[in-house]
Amino acid sequence: MASADLKDELTCSICLNLYTDPVTLHCGHNFCRECIENVLDTQNGSAAYTCPQCRAEFPERPVLQRNTTLRNIAGHVLSQEEQEEIFCTYCVHTPVVASKTCLWCEASVCDLHLMAHNKSLQHVLIPPTKSFRNRKCSRHKTVLMYYCTEDAECLCVSCCLGDKHRGHQVELLNEASNQKKTKLRTIQGHIIKEKDDNEKRIHDLRDHLRQIPEKAAGIVERVTAKFREIRMKVDDLENHVLKEISKQQEQVSLSVSDLIQQLESKKHNLSREISTIEDLCQMMDPLLYLQADRRDFTDVMDGDNYLKETEAADLSEDLIINTQTSGLMNIMSGLQKGYYVQEASGILLDVNTASNDVHISDDLKTVSCSKTKQGRLENPERFEYGRVLSLKGFSDIRLYWDVEVSKEGAWRVGMTYQSIERKGECSLIGNNKNSWSLRNFQNQYSIRHDGKEFKLSVQPSSHKVRIYLDYMAGLLSFYELSNSVKHLYTYNTRFTEPVYPVIHVWDNAWMRVLNYDNLNIW
Image (tube, rainbow, N blue to C red; front, side, top):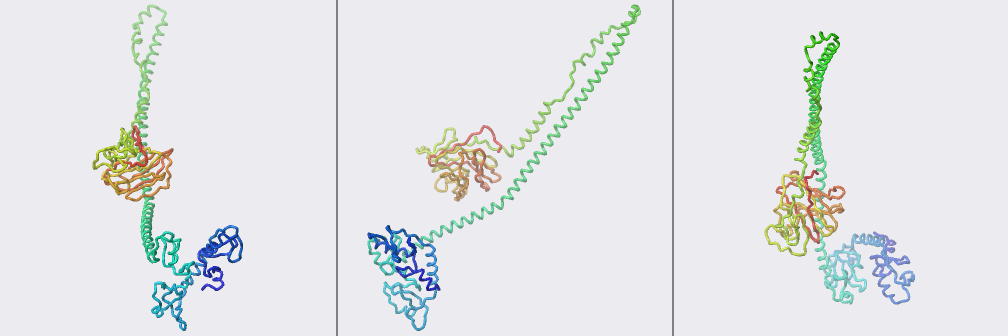
């Protein structure tokens, strides 16, 4: 129980009750807000405003500063008093616990005295309490029984008839309380649902977080295996090229050695002929010379001239380079089957699916929001608002496509099954299980699938977006293209139908599918 001295310190000197919403004047004294405002109202038009306790004067109406600490202490003391046992006011000789408190009489009664208590409507019975001040009008000192919905104030009968609340919607306290509780329960239901969704999102993200190391390990294993395979093929190609060089070296060496041997033999024969001719030329006796000269040596002049013209064989560097290049191209050809992606210029927009509030360019690459209805004939494939599909869907493939987006307006881009609804809320990209999207609205990225949308922490900084699809792996990723490629978000799912590029523009936005002349590795 609070001590008497503490209660004195927590008692307003005007109403002599515990503080209710205490405020402080410049002089340091505290009062209930309503009490001091009533006093200051009576001082309007006087020479100065004064403190009811110390008579300190203020030239202007003082600004009231809420005393939060004092309010909390008073509230704590009041709650302690509410928890204390309350006894019947009329059981004088033997204390009996009260079952009700009458606000009109400001008395608590036990079950016995309750039977004899006045049943008039003015006598309002509530659970036992010692606090009557908050239950009565501070101005008229009568029980608060009504609630003004416009001013959000609890009123007594006299307040309802006064000028301040005249003509306002007034309800009984119970009715007003029940209505507010009903509204709160509705809000509580939404909060509980949001909390449950948040918990599910956290659970999904934690599952995703646990899967990341396993997925990363799988990717590392596949990448390592691919590099190991590439290294083995490059090593095999290197050995093959080196063997080709050794083979050419051996063949050229044998050819050159044979030519040298032939030339050495011819050189020896020529030296012998030179010596013979020299001996003949040294003979002084004409008769002996003519008798000995049986040859004219013309055969030596005409024979074996082909050896002089024969060029020495050499290594064929072009053949070696061609062998190396051909081998590398074969290796790259094998890589292309796994890493080359679909040509982005192959994506065209399907006018038959375009809604009548979007314009499609002649090259079927650009979609823009149009204020003028396009007048296209209705068909089951046509979207109701702002959307268009591509002509072609994709499956069993890895590809990416890039789009350029406008600086103004709002847009969504993504992938969808052709079976997506074409009208109503379910036709919105990402508002169903058949589509996955990235949205930019009011300079904020968000992703949406199966009716659930989440904002991304990455702020838009470029006007080019890349959409990457690995159908077999069940991956759909979005990237922002600027000086570098910035990852925005990746969906991980299992595709069961071919997926089609889809675009949604509104608020004067436009989007263009970008062209590339060749296939791209990425």
